[in-house]
Amino acid sequence: MSRFQQIVAMVFVLSLFGRILGFVRNLFVSSTYGTSIEASAYYAAVVIPTTLWIIFPTVVNSLYIPTMKGLLAAGEEQRGHELYSKLFTLTILAGGGISLFGWLLNGPITQLLVPGFSPAEQQLVAGQLAWMWPSVLFIALLSLWSSLLQARDRFFASTLSTVVNSAVTILCFFLLVPSLGATGLAVATTIGFALAAATLVPSVLTLNMPFRLNFHWRGDPLLRSMGERFVPILFALILGQITVFFEKIIGSGLGEAQISALAYAATIVQLPMMVVGAATVPLFPLLSEYVKQDNLREMKRVLTLGLRYLLVLLVPISVGFFLLGKPLIAMLYQYNNFGPDDTALTYWALMFYGLGLFAVAARDLFTRAFYALENTRTPVIFAAVNVAVFISLGLLLVPWLDHGGIALASSLAAFLNIALLAVALRRRIGPFATAELYRTAGKAFLAVLAMAAAVLLLQWLLPLRNAWLACLAYAGAGALVYGLVLYLVQEPLISEIVGKIRRKAARAGQ
Image (cartoon, rainbow, N blue to C red):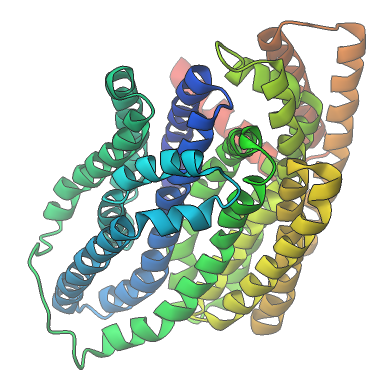
């Protein structure tokens, strides 16, 4: 196995573990509060730190890694140290400033976030959000330190920090919620981000990076170059994430249960998306490296490989959400205060969110390709189009589909976005959708049809009422049929995975 494949495998495993812990965290909330106002208040408030947890790392990653790769290739390690110290200073100022600004304007921000809530419900959201604002500083530091390590192809610590975040948050839930109530959810969230940032400090120290403030920003060409790209990248990400806030704004007028249902459905959807997406994180430094070498052929090969993996892994999951969504939700959430009605509300959103799995992951991959090319303008334009389409579709579909209309609008907007990005990227680097990609798509479609037929037949022949048995039996049978069909039609990605398993088994038996 090559070093790149080892890195991808390691990131995949750690990300999977982190997302499982994230599920456990949500299970605690659903079991304790169901779809009550306490749960909806928590999910409304936590959207701010979780959104920043998406925006900050991507911005810093997109700016820092291409710049640092260039310095390392030129042998200018000392300039890299100086650049880091300046960015460390800016990170503390920006993260601390946003934390303070948000805390001072906590009330008005809450009113904008959930305008459909009553004053008493808004007060509950504001109380939770006030405890979460300090987490912004820790998220900013996490973003800088993760990018610093990834620029040197050190992915273990940065991926492990996400595991620590979820594990610490869960532990604090159990320790704090019995005494603090719903406020304990907010306090635990901030502690989780703080300790996750702390786990990166030892790895950063091994690089001999200075933990000192450096205010000599003026006249630095590297900072100026990064600054020129900063605003469009930030604007593109804000536009990409603003849909999350509009979900809360539109959903707050539908009822308190709908916001929780959307959050629970989104969490299920994010598990495969974040795990598969995290496994493609090592592609960005690789794409940047090939761009620096002016090797567009290899860049396109890596981009196509990423798309093929997304197709093979995510399309069957989308269909699986439609076929097995209800028993899956019941298995994961239906305990204590989470009942069958809550399951039905969550499934209605899960079906429509699931449609956009591939589109959202492919959108992120295309966007990273543009950032590797240091083209920040195109993603900004299309992100603005995405927001406009989402809001329009959301307002149009909600009267017909309730909160499901919000989820469907998100998926449809993502598909339009990847279509626009793909066309623009083709004009920039030339054709990248090879015959191999189309063959993989065709084989995956054939395998998904076989999988769906097998699951429906098994449900008819062997109806199971127990959610755990239903999920394990039907999902296991579907996955087996899907993998078998791909193997029989000789899909290279599956053959490669099977070959690795056989080689490992052979080595273990020696």
